[in-house]
Image 1 (cartoon, one colour):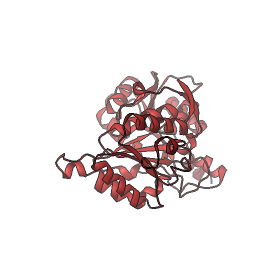
Image 2 (cartoon, one colour):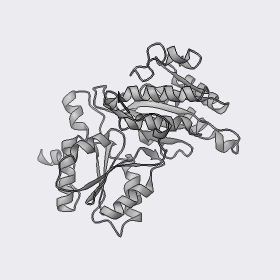
Image 3 (tube, one colour):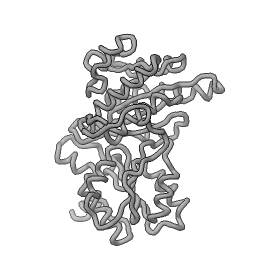
Length: 338
C-alpha cells in the first residue's frame, strides 16, 4: 500500500497494465512528452516508448477512430479525452462504431477500448469545461460507464476497464486529481465493473454517490445523529441494482447525490427503478440532491453555490429524515424569498 494522488494512481494503473500486456497502448493530446495535461501518464513515454505512448493531433475524431480500429484488430488502446466536452466531436466513433461492432459482426469482433476523460466543476474551468455529461451515454447499448471517486477507485476501475472486452468510458473528476490516499496496487486490487462499493454501513438511510459526490457525502455525514449507509456506485452503466436495492430494503429511504443538473440526471433512472420495484418498502419519496438546470458559472463563489457541497447535502438529508418529505432545493427557496 502506497500513498498516491489520484493522477499518480491513474498513471500507475496504466503502467501496471502495460507491463502485463504488450497490446495495451495509449493515445491522446499531450499524453507522451508532457506526461499528460493532468500528469496522468507521467513517465510512461520513457518506460514504454513512442510506439505505445502516442501524442496525437488535436483531433478527437481522428485519434478515437484510430483507437476503435486498433481495438477491433487486436490491441487494447486507452484514449484520453482532455475534457469530457471534447468527446462530442467524436461521439459517433464511440456510440455508433465501437459500441456496435460486436453486435453487427455477430460476435466476430470485440472492441476492448478504454476512453478516459476528465470531468466536473470545482476548479474554475467555466461552463464549457466543467460538465460531467453522463447523459450522453444513456440509451447506448454496448458501452460501459464508470467514474473514479478517489485514488483507489481510479486505479482499480482503470485496470478493470482496460481488461474488459467492451468499450468503457471512465470519468475522472478533475477536482480529485490532487487528492492523496493509500492505494493498494496489483491484480488483487482490480475492480469488477458493474459492482458498487458500500463505503459505510447504516440503518436509517441509503445515500448513493457517483464520482466526486462520494467524497462530498462522506464529508457531509462525518458527524450525524443518524446512521447512513453510503454507497459508491462506481459503475453507472450498468449500475449495481442488487447492492442498492438490498440497502434500500433495509433502510427504507434513498438519497441520490449528483453533480449534474437535476433534469435527466443519472439519479432519475435509479429513483424510477427503486420507486417502482421497492414501492412497498419505501418510507418516503426518493430524494435527489443535484445541481440546478443552469450553465456552470465561472466565478468562484457562484461555482461553489452551483455544486451540491457537503453543507448543503447534510442539511437536505437532515431535513428529509426529520420530516419524511422532500425538502425544497436551494434555488427554489431563493426564488421564493425574492
